Amino acid sequence: GAGVSQSPSNKVTEKGKDVELRCDPISGHTALYWYRQSLGQGLEFLIYFQGNSAPDKSGLPSDRFSAERTGGSVSTLTIQRTQQEDSAVYLCASSRDSVGSYEQYFGPGTRLTVT
Amino acid sequence: GQSLEQPSEVTAVEGAIVQINCTYQTSGFYGLSWYQQHDGGAPTFLSYNALDGLEETGRFSSFLSRSDSYGYLLLQELQMKDSASYFCAVGGGGFKTIFGAGTRLFVKA
Image (cartoon, rainbow over all chains, first blue to last red; front, side, top):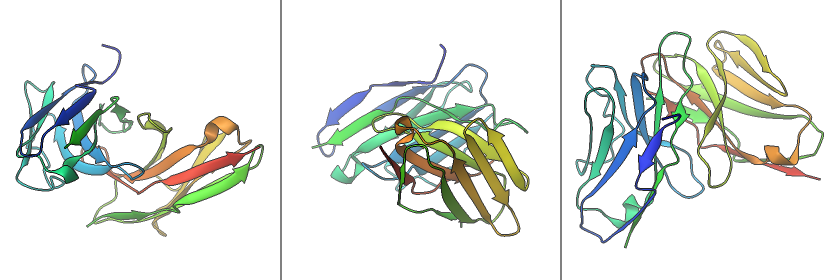
């Protein structure tokens, strides 16, 4: 595909349910980021994958959040036992992330609403 | 830890020049980026500075002073379509990226 894609675009779930959010990065991009953005707020870093290195999970807000990246491509962010404060737009971005190439390309995001 | 500070809002008139400042505190430094985000849209990349000095891209320029842990985004010949949120960010090049809280720019006719 031409850009980063995310699915679903919208997700409404009941408090306590688990959700999975998917990100397809641009082909050939070794770096993949997940961010969370609440309405009118900045981007909160969640997790960073770079090639085959261990991911930087330092931004995950609790152990209910986890992410994996299979085959160095598609990534899934899982939120277990969702809470209302998890409601936000979840953005995925990818980049070549090599020396001289820092531009991140963002997907359209998944809007998560926990009722 | 890492933190970035930028003004929450800036207002300017069409055709004017506006500067959005960003100061940062980081345990390491790997470059300062700027992104634009329109309401309901995804952030899009504007510029990146790894070294001190000014980078110019059309109407937009970005400046970095590593000794002062400071940078700014300069927007010239403002247009209504420039009304958006602007984020500075540090990181990249194999390290995680941290974003500032964003500056909302209002361009008035």
